[in-house]
Length: 555
Image 1 (tube, rainbow, N blue to C red):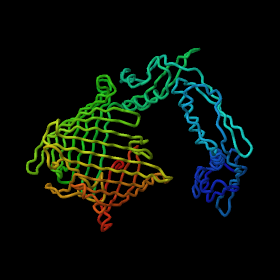
Image 2: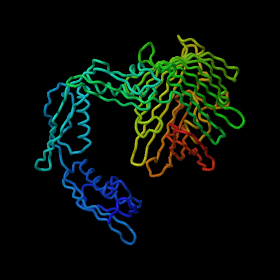
Image 3: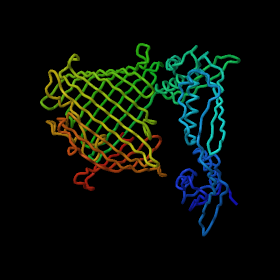
Image 4: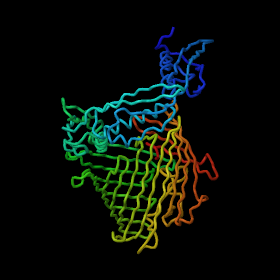
């Protein structure tokens, strides 16, 4: 007799009667694995999972006709007996009550097509979306499936529109320290407008992007016997003062500490203040110190144009560079995932090589596309950044240079494996009064953050500072993150490569510095703990590697 909560170790699972779906595939959806201990009740739950999977693939008549639980020589075996039936084909899809003009724009699934729940789900989602974008918050549909001879089916949708609604009032609930007007200005849909679910979704996204709220929900409340509805946003405020600390270590003897203090609601109006530091320290002296103070106004002149002003101080003993100055930036969200920006930077640069001093003014544009599902630990999505920059000319300053930076990352999951890739490139060239790129503006490559397995700033061509630099670079990173295996700590394999030259014609495959390595990751309280060891591929010697400890993924 099976006791649902009793735990046993399952040695083998067998499926009888299967022809269309492989045993390997079924083992991935039953909810437990061979050679693991489970509760006996999970054996029963697997029956529902098997049938649900078959139905989602168009085997509408499939069912588990029986199952057997056997014990032999202290080993436990499970047999599932399955009737598959035939996979159905959708002959046609019809809509009843198709009178609205906006329905003419909807893309009907191409038929005949194999019946799959994914196809049905995507089409039904598009129906709900188009109705709710056009003012029908209470739209519903009824699906009827009629089976024909030859394993074909006809699907008929009965559209139940409900009444078209207008926004009567917008209410805000849950605010304590944040003023109501701050929330209202992030809400795109207004009183008197036709109901539009897309505007409401954008409003929720805008509210989250302020960083002021940890949870946002909305309710649609119809007024009695009316076409009017009230829209209620319920919000939970975040702490407005946040301190983040990050740390890292490399076997070159460098300790890195990053701090970020944020105040997200100055004066109760949603303005923000940031204080950031980044320190690289070895046992003898500070290699790198960077400090930024930023003020951000989310609504410049009453428009949704975030404006920031930053004062910065930057000093690096290996670069032999000291920077001081300020920069201002205006950004604009074009869509939910696409953002553009303009930045003006004015700075004084000092170097120890030949008592170098210069005033540099930069104007840059940026275009960012980011649909990653997580900023900290993404497992799908794309990040793309392009920044063209100009210094000098009508901006004044001591150098006329142009620069282009491109950064592209892509994340995709394959079973238990996450493939993470990054590609970066940069070019800098002179014009006008300037014949050579100033040393302070050259690119640097190598070490943590770019190419693991070689020293910091060790890729490129020697310059007067005693380090390597260049005017043109390419950097690629590839990580295989085995994060879906059933362990809290998961392994990572990586390949990094890069090249940095002063002349673009010098870029070739033989110039690339290639490294490989492995690491471990562990997620604790939402923070990624990272350990990496990298080795240079040329003349590979596993006794000469570089160790990196850090918080968060490298990219």
